[in-house]
Length: 109
Image (cartoon, rainbow, N blue to C red):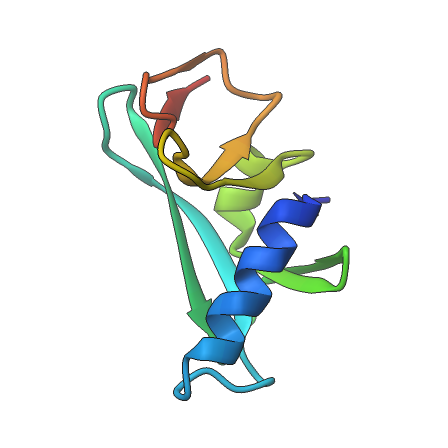
């Protein structure tokens, strides 16, 4: 399962309602790729096309989709949002990460 915090849900709804190009058919796609200062990086975007091996979750009223390989890294993670002057935007709280970088955008196992 991939979880979505209340703050992330509110920001996702705000983005979707303020962007005319994103309608109700869009969902949040998250993935993990090689890169970043810790070795692996998180990616997040809106998408409306499912792939054959996608893993689909719904938490807190938000549909989250990821590919199978990324799910192995993201299992039991929570998508958070932190705004304000010292906020980091969207970030993952990942219990599988052994180490994360200072910006929270990359991790290693």
